[in-house]
Image 1 (cartoon, rainbow, N blue to C red):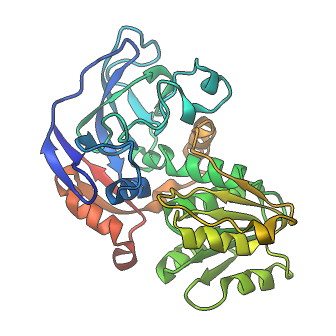
Image 2 (cartoon, rainbow, N blue to C red; image 1 turned 90 degrees about the vertical axis):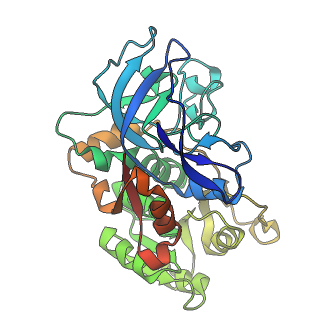
Image 3 (cartoon, rainbow, N blue to C red; image 1 turned 30 degrees about the horizontal axis):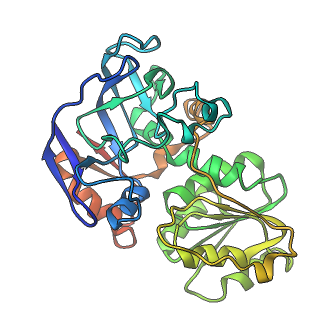
Length: 345
């Protein structure tokens, strides 16, 4: 099969790769019909994720059709159309029983990280019964790719961890796909202010269309002063870090109100500074999380009902043999105005 293979920092290629096969009783083999590129894939290519080693097929998002299942799979059969979760869960270990599927002892974030992923024609899914979701008949399967990762990530790591509340103020640093997913799902809780912050004017225009009450271009002046001006001098009740670089995490510390929450979502590959000399007395909570995808069934219902429209995040479409072009487009979003790129083998 064709697959996008990681060959070390800065190196990738579309290669002929062995087809996946059933290895465990709970495995399923899925033929990929739609996949995408995540910001985390760019972090891997930068060398920020040492658990991903050369030779790995990248990708952890997608939808497809079940081709084969192991003898232990009860809920899926060949021909089923499925959504692939970016998190693999056994549903039995101690972490899974606590709802921390991201830390599953035999799963977690393994696709495109420690086992071969979804940027390929086929993928092996361990623990298929608890790591796949049936796609309802008539659902737009390309849009459902957004439910593999970015929507549950923005919602769980940003909105839920950030304790977004009715009437509250929310500042989201980073208007990329994850930040926009947090923006979309924060509206479930009717905050009074949704402030989106980014360098990219185009992405801020998108954020306005997606429901941001205010946008701030971070190159235009003092962002902290602008946020305090919008919030009566207090700062934001919830600050969501959706970039993953030291400067944005430091900015979040300047934006949070006393008693507020900084919810980190970004993937950080280098150390960041924590300014306890300023924050120790401010009753601030800082949260970290890898998405657990516990909210995927709920989010799937909101998409099928039309309450949430993730198709609006898709800006570019490519074939698998154009995946190098897809990476260049996604990796230069400021020039290409890319949000999510869809790849169809």
